[in-house]
Length: 95
Image 1: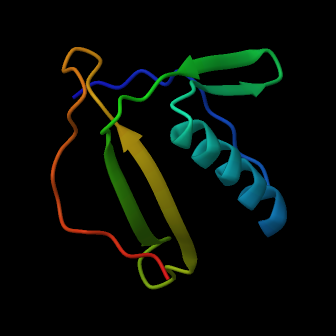
Image 2: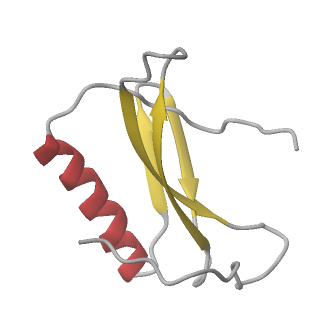
């Protein structure tokens, strides 16, 4: 399926700075507010529905035999034309 990137930002941040960004997203989700993303001249405003699909993915990446890069990705996904319901899946636990 084709993809259009509406916004992208990537930079090294301290764990505390990252936690602050994630907290702001969590606060906006709790209060059902839009999520406003801005970096330089780029910006986008997104309004997730009450039940988007939440995906968490942990990966190991790199060339064969030297896969030393690790990542964790948190993704909210929804169809703008589908109303309020997201997909169903197993219960996530984060400890």
